[in-house]
Image (cartoon, rainbow, N blue to C red; front, side):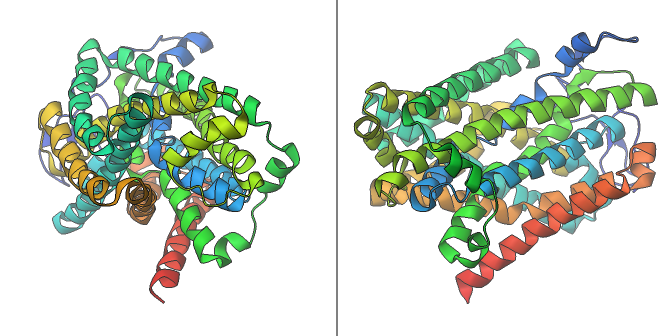
Length: 449
């Protein structure tokens, strides 16, 4: 790949093609960063935000489905998958920040600049499938939360999610910083709800510690592997890689080598802290299911609605179920926002097509609502639960098609210069990529053998 223009310029659509504007152009370099030496906390404060938008994708309703199913069926065993998935995510998101800050390209733009038209069309199509699968989880999760809190029928709740899209898009008019603040506020609500839930559940510390150690049974047991793949897909989401590489460019940092180095340090710290926050929430979902349902012999709880109905009688606190539903609603709304941004970035980056945000969002949401409403009408709660987990497996199957280019680009010295991945980081990053591919192939072999 030829070296890209600086981040202050527009990015190239294809190799040798005319220069074009960056994705999310209205927010590009719109947030000032203090210049000069020192001022660590002020600079870190300026960079804090994109990591939390990314972290939202790591705790959407799809995570709830896989966490509840895994915790109730297998206890704390799959906690190690949650931990390893989160560690993988921290490495991959740091690479996204590096690509955006150093090269001035998001992942979709880099793919468009490097690959032939047929290849990038395939990559775009696969990424769109991932976004729809993620949106499917958000639709179902929000509809379930509305049903639990207000008694709204599941099918009607799915339809109502078409309206919440427009309300969320209105937030973008207040500026990117306000959008980040709103998302962080919702994350705090989710974390507070689960902190109270865990205090009520009183999980076994020893069981949690043992669950953090990987077990060979995860790979050899087809049912456990299916849930594990779902957890991986629900945690390391493909569209998050495109999202992060773009939104780090909303910061107006110094474009010199020193400025980029400092920006990369702050952006990596931001995403690592945010993903640590996401790990607490994802682990809490599984731990809550394991300590409440599995230990009581209820290994069959795989549906969010069942978990809601059982929490109050099993924990002995009427507040437990309400907190659970409130956190679920906040999770669905948060993921809706980041899904909208990721959809814009992917379409602009791969195809150089710029649709109005509302139109882009309505198209994506419509593609998710149709299967969700159909399954809800025909099969009810059990059908939507299975569809939720399946959507996360689809995300995992799409993941290698985003991870491979990301690792390739950030390991390219011509593109990254002195910021190219070190030898150790290359080994770790390619190891993550190959692990994801191996797990997906194992699942496919076990499924169709």
